[in-house]
Length: 324
Image (tube, rainbow, N blue to C red; front, side):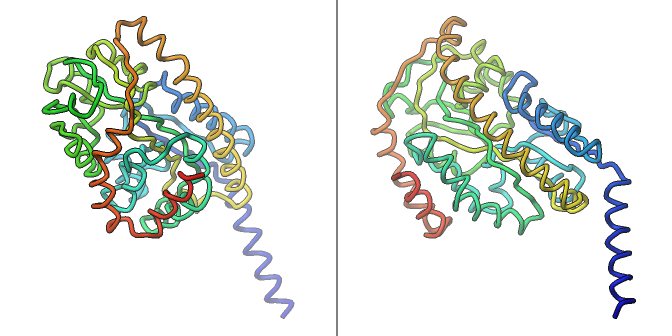
C-alpha cells in the first residue's frame, strides 16, 4: 500500500515538474484592429498572464485577421492548431445552431441584464455546450450594441430598410433578422467589408460603434442610425487541448485574469459608446436615434422560428434575465 502511495506521489511530482519546466506559448487570434478594445484588453491579459505565471504561460497576439477570418479561427481552435482567440460568439453557430441565441434581435433592454445572463446560467449552459466541441470559454467579453450605417438616407423606421443592400455577418440568424425587417442582406467576411462599401457593392452594414470607428467605416458610410438591434457577447476562448496542457495552478490564474479583463473590456466598450457618438459626428457621419419598438415588432417572427432551434431551456434564460 505504501509503495502505491509512493508511486502516485512520484507521478504527481513528475507531472508538476513537467508543467513547470515546459513553458507554454499560446497564439491568440482575432479579426479586429490593434486600436480596438478587444486588442487592448487582450494585450493587458497577455501581460498579466506572463507576470503572474512567472513565464510558464505566455500569449502572443495576432490581431487584424492575421490568422484568418472568424470561421478560420474557430476551426483552428477546434483542431488545436490555434490555442486561443477572441471570437464574436455568433461565429460559433456553424458548429452548433444553439449558439445563435447570442444573436437574437432586441433581446437585451440594457447591458446589465446581458452581463448577468452571460456571467450566470445562460453563460454556463453555453460554456457546457462549447465543451462538446473541444472549446473552453474562459469569459464573456462584449461586442456591444450593433447599429446600422448606410449611404442612402437615415433609417428612422423599418420601412427605411426596404431593399437596402446590407452586409451582415455570415450567420443565418442575422440574415433572417434583416430579411424580416425588409432589407436585402448578404454575408461577407469582415476583412472584406471596407473595400466592399468603398466600391458600393453594399449600401449598408451593421456593427458596434467601436468597430465603425476603429475600422474607419465612417470614411465609406454617411448615415449612422442607432438601431441597437443586437447586443452580442464576444468570448475569450481556448482550445480544449491547449487548456489541458496548463497546470491546475496556472489554469486558476488564467481564469481569474480572464474575468478581470472581461470587466475591463466591458468598461472600455461602455466608455467607447459614450465617446464615439460625438467623435463620429466630427468625422462627418450624420447620426439619428430610432424608436426600437417598431423594429422589435418586425422581428417577432424570427423569435418564433428560432424557439424550436434553441429549445425552451435557453430561450427561458434569455427571457428571465431580460425581464430583470
